[in-house]
Length: 160
Image (tube, rainbow, N blue to C red):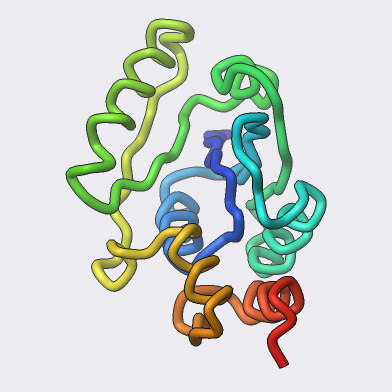
């Protein structure tokens, strides 16, 4: 069974994330979408809220597991018997950081490959920070996130 890990902060999960996940599902038997705990970030949604939003957004995909982890990604991948890490590349600006991470992960565990996937072009400008800001300012994020995420953002920002 080919297993891949799709890590991120997913604060919140967007349609761009889901697009990458849909692409990964075609390549792997199982994809574990996992929240990487990062103490240096101050997320809008709690870890449990993000897990629930992801679960709701991916519930139609039986080959997707939702989880969270702390520590080294390659250690987590080993624990899950994964052979690959999935990362999305939206633009050239993502590449340098992602390449450095991929090379470091390869050094730490050469058995885990990094697979870069490009989203549909309609999502190349999309990220969670932009979605949070648009929502905070009362803008319409319906085209950017699943309905459950839109509702959660409205609740956080008390949109009526």
